[in-house]
Image 1 (cartoon, rainbow, N blue to C red):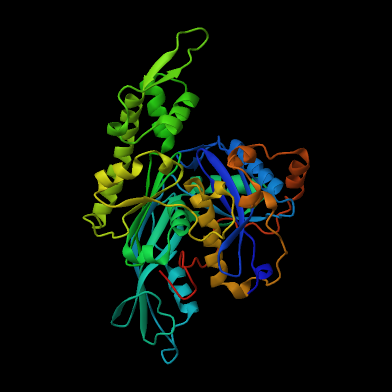
Image 2 (image 1 turned 90 degrees about the vertical axis):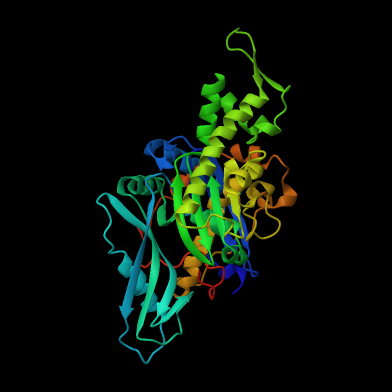
Length: 462
C-alpha cells in the first residue's frame, strides 16, 4: 500500500504539564512520518485527571492551533486520547467459548466475540471498562497460544487483562475533547501507548517494565514473554518533585522547576558538595544560596519512593529478581533527570535505559519529537494504526495527499524547535480551528470490539 493510501491518525496527550497533538502517517516502509505537531501548557489537569474542563479545552485548542500552524493543510476530526490518573485499576479474567462450526478454522470474528464478552464482566459501580487485552489463548488442551486464528478445535478461551477507570474521570476527558470540536476515537491507557512508542518486538519477548514518569503520575506497564502482565498508575510524578523542592528550599514553583531541570540529579552522591545556585531575592530581599547537594537529596527521596512502588508492583506479579531480561525502560518527561538510570538500577536491581519514541519513527523528523516527553503521544498514533490494520476493510482507501512540511523536517529546524513551537499561533489559525468544528460522528464512550493492543505486525499478536 503506498503512502497516499494510508490514513492520517492523530494522538492527543492530555497531560498534567503539557497537552500535545501529533498527526502521523505510515510510509511505505511501515515507519511513522510526522505531518503535524503542536503543544501547549496544561492547566486544567491534576495528577493525570481532567479537573477544570474549561482550562483543558483552551489548552487543547491552543495545541490544535499550533498543530495547524505546523501544517495548514491538516484536517483533524478524530483523535486517540491517552488516559491515566490514580483511579485506573486492572484485573485478570478468564473467558471461553464453545464453537458451533468446529469443522472450520478459528476466525477473527470469534476472537472479537470472546473479547466483547469480557465487557460484561462485573466491576464496581462508578467504574467503567476502558480496555480488554487478551494475554494468551487456549484451544482445547493446547495452552499459551499467542494467536489462535487458523487453529481448529471445539473450545477457544483466553486470559484477559481488563483496565477500568472512574466514569466521571472518563466523562471529563470526553467532554473536554468534544467541546474542543473533536471526537474521541478511542481512549488508550498511557503506559500502553508509551510502551508501543519505545519498544520493539524483541523487548516484549525479553520481558520489560515500561516506567513513564509524567508530570502528575508515573505509569507502569510490564510485559513478559510477549504478554502484557501488569499495568499500574503510581500517583506521583515530576510535579511532586517540583513541589518538594519548592517547599523544602523555600523557593517559587517556577524557580523549583527550573532548578530541577537545569541542576537536578536523582543521586545525591553525584552532586558536588561545594556547588551552589544563587536565587535572586523577592522585592529587595537578599539573594538565596541553594546547595546543589540539598537539591539532589530532595529529588532522590521522591524518585526512590516512585521506584519503590515500581519494585512493589513487580513483586506482586512475581517478576522481580532479574526475570525481566529487558530491564526497566524509563520514558516520559521525568526520564530526562540526570543519574536516574543509576538510581533505578540501584532500587530495582534491574538494568535500566531511557526509552526514546524513535523506535517506529521515519528518519528526518525534528529533534524535538525524539524526546521521551512525546512517547505517549506517538504511541497513541501507533495504537490507531494497530486498530486500522485490524479493521482495514472498514476504512475507506481514499486518503488526502499531504506532504511533510519543511518545519517538521530535521534539516530545516534548529535545536530551538521547542521554543519556536510555543510561538506558533495566529488569528488565521484560530479561525481555522473554529471552522473545523463540524463533528460528523462522536464516539460517545468507546468503540465496540476493542482489539489486541500493539501488534508490531499484523501477524504478530502479543
